[in-house]
Image (cartoon, rainbow, N blue to C red; front, side, top):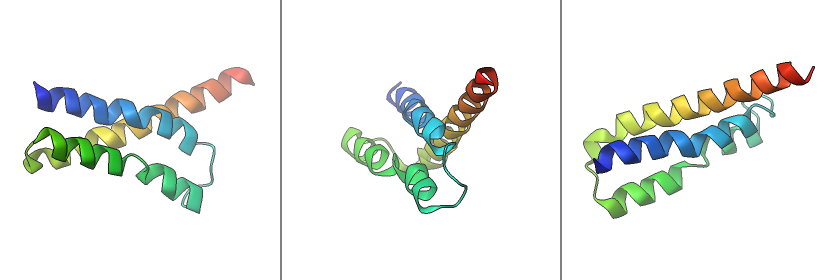
Amino acid sequence: METVLFTLFCALVNIPLGIWRRRHKKFSLPWILIVHASIPLVITIRVLSGINSLFIPVFILFAVLGQYAGGKMSANYMKQRK
C-alpha cells in the first residue's frame, strides 16, 4: 500500500512542475532545473520510508507521466484562453 501511495505522490508532485515547465524553452537551464526539481524530494521520502529500490523505474515513470499531464493541462488552458 505504501508503494502505491508513493507512486501516486510521484505523479502528483510533478503535475505543477509540468505546468511550470511548459512556459520555458525546451532544454534551457530553467527547463532542465524544473524537470529535475522533484528528484531530491522523491529520493528523500523513498529512503526515509524504506521503500525497496526495485520500484525506482515505476516511480520515474509516474514522475514523467505527472510532468506530461501537467504540460498537457497547461497547453489546454492556453488554448482556452485564446
